[in-house]
Image (cartoon, rainbow, N blue to C red; front, top):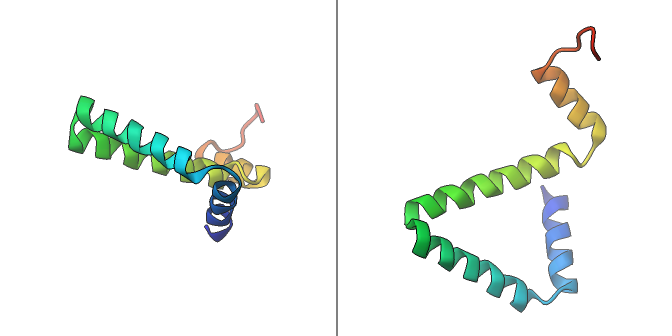
Length: 78
């Protein structure tokens, strides 16, 4: 988790943080206007969950293979 956060902060130092956050708040404001508070909160929560799960699983290919083996046990096709 610390490695992920350090990567995010590293990218923010290299990029223009003002432009990034302006874009994020613009998108959040649009979502609030279109969908309302609770639907926007639902979208944001699931987006963050998807980001963290994706970054956790795809950071190491062996970790992803172990995850697939837990969900889909190895059979005659693998």
